[in-house]
Image (cartoon, rainbow, N blue to C red):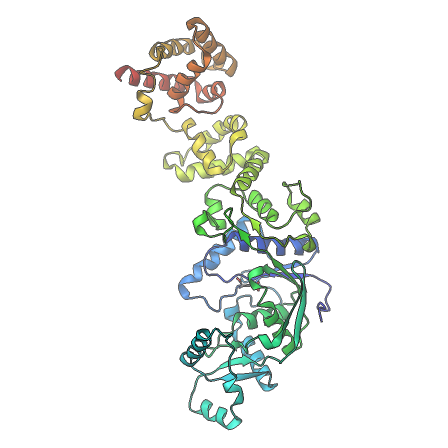
Amino acid sequence: MNSKTADTETRLRFAPSPTGYLHIGSARTAFFNWLYAKKTGGKFILRIEDTDIKRHQEDTISTILDSLKWLEIGWDEGPDVGGDYGPYRQSERLGIYKDYAQKLLEEKKAYRCFCSQEQLREKREEALKINEFYKYDRRCFNLTENEISAKIKSGDKFSIRILIPQNKIISFNDNVYGYIKINSSNVDDFIILRSSGMPTYNFSAAVDDYLMKITHVIRGEDHLYNTPKQLIIYDALGFDYPDFTHLPMILAADGQKLSKRHGSISIESYREEGFLPEAVLNYIALLGWSYDEKTTIFSIDEMTEKFDLKSINKKASRFDYEKLLYLNGYYIRELDENRLEEILIHEITEKNENLRDKSDFLREKLGKIIPVTKKRVRTISDYEKAVLPFFNPVSYSDNTKKYFAKKDFDAKMLLEKSIKSLENLDDSSFTTENIENKLRTISANLGLEFKKVAEVIRIAIWGKPVSPPLFETIEILGSRTTLLRLKNYLDLISQA
Ligand code: GLU
């Protein structure tokens, strides 16, 4: 019965349980659903599965929504935008689950279970002791109508269990894992509605996927063994099945399940670390999917065109942080320079209070800085740190102060000569070429390798032996700042 709903429009959903942040794996799930909806001209729906969440976890919903928005994964229907099949938060749909559970009770496809948690735990432990598969013993299924009425009358709490048909083959075709079948006798009469009135995941997911007319379910492979349970619900309620795709796990580089100890795993943290959403999206698209062996850079349009549920890899993918960094560097370089300027200004002003009201000055400088620096950059946060000496005074560490004390040349004299020579350039002639000429002349006159000259100047103007391209950097710093830094450093090493 693998047929779709009568409508031709594809409808896909992302259904997070808001228990924390948006994990990189969940972001991939959301993205693949979104991508497939886009590819097929369908709809992408956001459904919040929050029947388990506690009040203090409420803000995790906005964290997830913000992360999706940052990735520019937008939804056509969802809790904040509404839609024809809402509400889109399961906590607001409790009446619906109750009605369907009631319907199943009336049709004798489900039954009330009065067993206490304690009783059930004992049974489970007993089964565990003798190494046996635990299955609910159907004790409450065998209660008579009178016994049931009496228990209800005396206020006994009950949950509702689905009555699993015996010895029936439950099967479906998964786009990644292929044909999957299980014998229903291996499935426990699981609870569909708890005594608290809350549905269990397999019940609410099946009911909602049906009511929201979901045609394709794409989710993590950790749900692969939930699917038959949901199919049992579909069958009991007479619903058609959607098309299923389960996405293989994402492992860390060491082959273990990707977790916090491997570094950042939330979209939020990548955002904070200075990754661009397009790089993250491109990277997660490659986790488990590729249209050929070679291509690693895809635009959204290319991905939309090439993406195919059938070409998802069955093998678990490995998270490769270096590749993500590489892609991020690529996207930073490709970025329109005005946008990059704005992103950097935002980053710089957020992290440096003293520069907060200096956007015009920053913009003017960054216009020159970006073209000479963006080649080496891999993240926006690193970029912010790397360009900061253009704006903030440099400080010299103790090591830097003594850096040239024991060298085989006179750094002090070199600085004096450089200062004198650069002082001869007025503002209009303080250009990359003239600066290079002056410094190379000093190097030639002193018979000193240029490398050594450059090292002294770099430490003086940048505080460390590595800087963006030297002559360009000096030009951008400008004559006043350059001379000030050269003099400051000269003073310092004169005292050392
Ligand atoms: N709430 C489930 C989760 O976050 C959704 C699974 C599904 O897509 O059915 O894992």
